[in-house]
Amino acid sequence: GPAGAGRDGAGCGHRRTGPVDRRAKLFYLWARTRREPAHPNRHVTSRKETAMNRRKSPPRRGPVATLAGLALVLAGLGVATPAKACGPDSDCVIGARAYRAALPPAPDGRAIIFFHGYRGSAAAEMRNPGLRNLARDLGAILIAAASRDHDWNIPGSPSEDKSRPGEELAYFDALLADARARFGLDPARTLVAGFSAGGMVVWNLACFRGQSVAGFAPMSGTFWEPMPEACPTGAVDLYQSHGTRDSVVPMAGRPIQDTRQGDVAQAFALMTRAGGYGAARPVAVTGYDCARRTNPARKVLELCTFAGGHGFRAAFLKRVWAELGLDG
Image 1 (cartoon, helix red, strand yellow):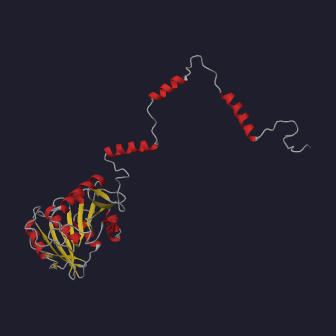
Image 2: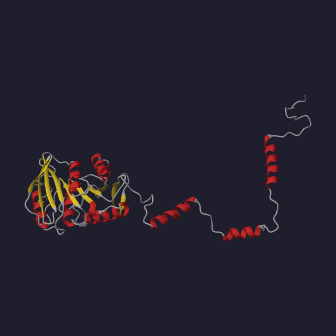
């Protein structure tokens, strides 16, 4: 045939119909069948009316504006939005301070608030498998408190900042209120514990915030000298563990720079007077040598020593948890 002739007859006097033309024709025929006959009472909107309606209608909101509005509503209801969310890997911010939290599968308000040692951090405590596993097994919210610049502002300590007196008491108050609102923490079913410098914070909390929670468990901690003259909150439930060979915070205390750690026996004598506790009596506890004092209100003041150095065992906290009646 002639040059350029194809299978569809191009070059033989026929108009070539390509796939695009065929689709356009089919669409035209389909559209005609879809047209509805004009109804005598149907109003046809003019271009002028359409323009006026557009001016009257509020602007359409995109997904960003919608999400922003939702965030404002949730914030007004007190619901944590993503910006406010926190947990074991992110800070729960309260003013210039923060803490971290790990929740059990079914939190019911019971909690452990833990104060880390010198140069520690809330992040490090959240990586402590002993604490995390303990809290999970107990069904407790685990709150890891965080010091400012890795050290606590403790009265009498070398790092005490006298320009901010009572800083850690105020921080504790703010933490307790925030965790209560954010996670449903129940102070009446909360154990406050701490190790080393964190245990020293716990001693101060027991002395000045004794009625705020269920009980206290300072481990390898004490007051710094001079000790408080009195503990205004009176009797508390306090259980302490301490290694008899502890050289970091010895039972009798030790001087550091121009300060001195307090004697643990004197700290217990102070609390005994404040709470009206009776004479100490031995208590059988595996792995510990424990002496317990009680008062007429059945508050417990107990010191448990073990043959070891500067350290603590999560199992000790488990026992204190049960003694406080928080395991049921």
